[in-house]
Length: 51
Image 1 (cartoon, rainbow, N blue to C red):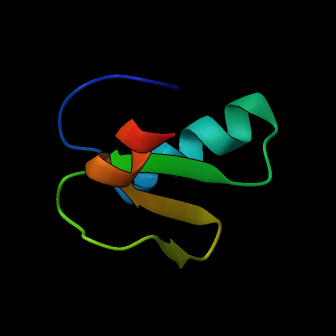
Image 2: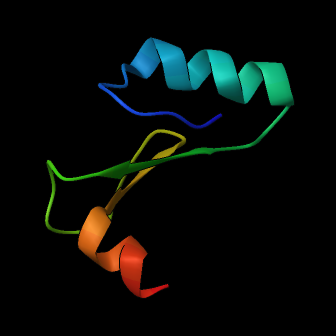
Image 3: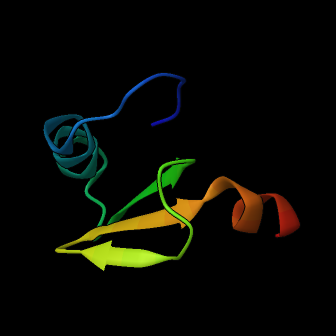
């Protein structure tokens, strides 16, 4: 699931369930480090741009 704008935990959880995934990834400018909360991984946009 992709898209712009604010993503809530519920949106990511719905996408994980819809696609049968084990985890979800959020590319965000609200964090400076990679974090994992439950089954959601938050990646800073600067880090993602280097991948």
